[in-house]
Amino acid sequence: MLAEDQRMVRGALAALLGLEADLEVVGEASGGEEAVAVAARTRPDVVLLDIEMPGRDGLAAAPEIRAAVPDCKIMILTTFGRPGYLRRAMEAGASAFLVKDGPAQELAAAIRRVVAGERVIDPALAAAALSAGPNPLSPRERDVLDAGADGSTIADIAGRLHLSEGTVRNYLSSAINKVGARNRIEAVHTARAQGWL
Image (tube, rainbow, N blue to C red):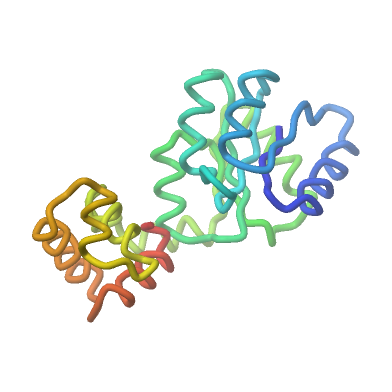
């Protein structure tokens, strides 16, 4: 099954995989919520998930797909080869993490390897993830930093997350310090570049 929001890319992937005698695309989705529903309905052996999709992203959809279809293998296929994304994908139960600029002929081989029980990870990204270390942000710091990424005021963030303004300030301050940033905007940029948000 394919979950990719760009129709042309999704169509190209379906056509590419359709050329393989032993592979069949049984479903397609353009967003995370739709991916969960299509996976539950079609019960695929493997789901290729993009990370950046409207609504629920691929990293959020992965554990839900695994819960709905426990035997399904999750493969992340993304443009964004960020170390933090790789760690989050592995924590979500992904069996593979590949970047879209890899050779096309390797995709079918990677699917076969995943079905055989192997883990397939882009080697350059694996090295970068090891050198980058774990995500320094707590889940709540990520929530607060992400909620403030659009320039929202402390009061707006507090209202959305049902926290006090002082608590929001504390989480923001902690997140800014942990990523070595000077301010919230720089912290958001750094955290996104690393794949921590």
